[in-house]
Image (cartoon, rainbow, N blue to C red; front, side):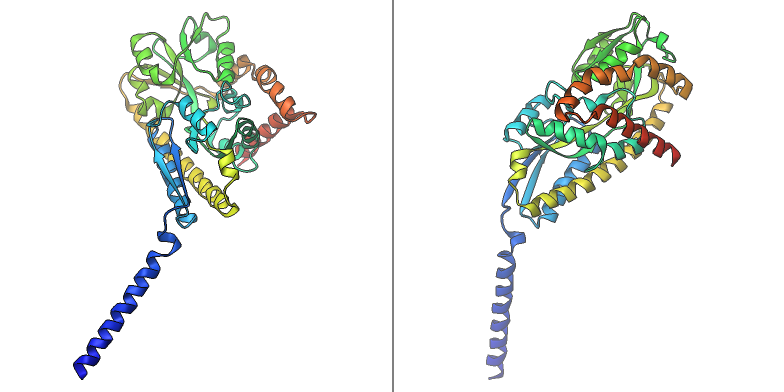
Length: 359
């Protein structure tokens, strides 16, 4: 009888364990996700990819598995513009984009020359939800059917070339520079080189290494990460840390699909985006510091750090205010009628600059 009693207890225990296991297998966390999205990275940038993967993991965590975002790194889903159009029409839900004005008519604010000059300024101006540049770029992305989640940055741009050290605008004499579709930067560079015989050539970023190595162009604007990760320092001899414009690209989502999500899922995505942005800034700052130190030791690569007085000469020659009036004001006047947004933005950016320098 004792054996029968023991056997009965064992059977009961197994039944109870089976019931518990069944309960866990039927829990929401173990269920198939309600929303399965795709996130396509348009570039080959390892530090940004780490933060993008973190974003996807956090969305799954904060939605308790209700949303799963599969990450496709390094341009695996197509070119920048192909992924942009896929997100715009909804076959891919999320991507990271440089808002060139041929794609985002109001996207010129990313590359206006002499606008942002430090990490701290970037974090404030592009910060969600109240950063002045975040707000205008969100409106610009909304116009073309997207919502911005957060901003990636790789830091400041300088000028590199294979001919000579650039200390003054006169040193741009007869150089051929690669440029892109970021019109504010193009116009700023052209103004800085006005009267020197400098010329510009539009070349895709992915073709820049070969263009520099073959002498198709003498130089380009560049960033510390690209000098290392995209190996531009292998095919350039001189780099001036001018810090005359700031890198920024947005992680953007198809707006119609985002708006259709339940509010709690949207809140989880927003929370994940905020943490991913903080993570990205931390990674980027550390990576840039390390890359800069490595480049200082690289043979046959010379870095020049201009003084503030030398930077001011380039800044004045760039005629940034006239570029704002030409490129930004028409869109701003249409998007914010009667609000004098050009002056409001410039005033806010100047206040940010003073705040950062004071701190």
